[in-house]
Length: 179
Length: 102
Image (cartoon, rainbow over all chains, first blue to last red; front, side, top):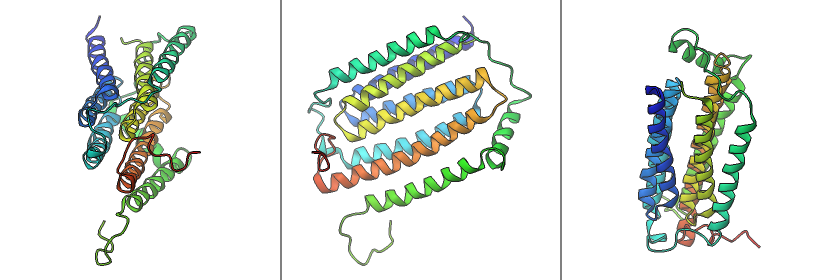
């Protein structure tokens, strides 16, 4: 067992336990904090996969932006669901069953695919080469410039839509474009 | 070296945990957290396949970045909707939001 494998097992176990606690915590603030731990574990996995840029983006986008957004929403809506109420709906047994069946089916599927024990091919050059290729492919007309632009338009539309939807229902006339 | 199957099994497990959260939680914010977990599991899969099977083909990483963008917009719109629903109905339980259900 090499050091990399030990690092993978530690990061994987932490991520999995944190994910289970996200789903099972009664207190939503705790669930959001466990979610941050799970996202950090995924960032560590990205580092193990030699995708350093994606690990940075994971920290910057997920832990920095999305997790903060979720925590703020939990705080804004905290009085709606008290901690002592039941947090799972009446179908939770079926939900657990279908999740387990999906997991078992995926494991069976993995067993049937040959060549899952391949060695990773060596990356060409230093890590900067990959990052450079990634950046150039995003603005290359022959590669991924259209998905890239569509993603930026989607983000803009989502932001405008979020501002519009979350606006107070009847706002006073004097605070026009405050949000 | 870490076998590729370890990554696949881990991401399948995280995906199933997220699926359970989406199906079983009553709180709409918790459902969104489950969706984030599922998207992260998919990202692990994408990066693992990129690294092990085709490291010269950069599309794997580009796909992950697109997933990041979609996840960010999904979280923004979803949480805005939840806040708006909370303002109108003082509830964030998914089974109380039944105005468009028949």
